[in-house]
Image 1 (cartoon, rainbow, N blue to C red):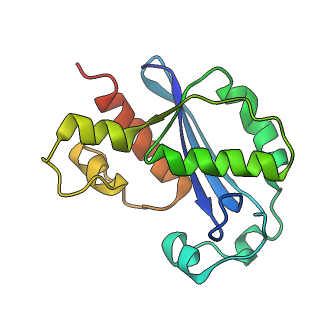
Image 2 (image 1 turned 90 degrees about the vertical axis):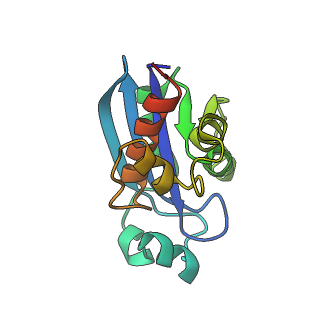
Length: 167
């Protein structure tokens, strides 16, 4: 797989529709071609203490940001026809489907691949866990800013290039 978009969402609270940031790394011909990062005003528009402790974002950070449909309008054409890759893809796919539903948008049935599942299959019991930062480090990527959507997407892209295209 040499052409894909690695994606990562952060959420404001426990609702999957509450995406408050998105990071996307577009890969063409096995090379990173573009990096995209947006803050998003979430729906519902409140932050849980738990989520803020994870990613550091608060209501003040996103109060003046665009809501999802306007952000996605800038992104959709760039990832059209590309498979999406995420670490623990069930979370990111659930968020994407939920936010599409919240805004009554027609979901285009994106094809998702999971680097967490792929790393479990490839590395077996070699790693102590299969969290993004652990797998990224094992694959040679220093994820210094974990839980920032763009850096997580970049780590995911790096992992995907290493394990979904083994030499």
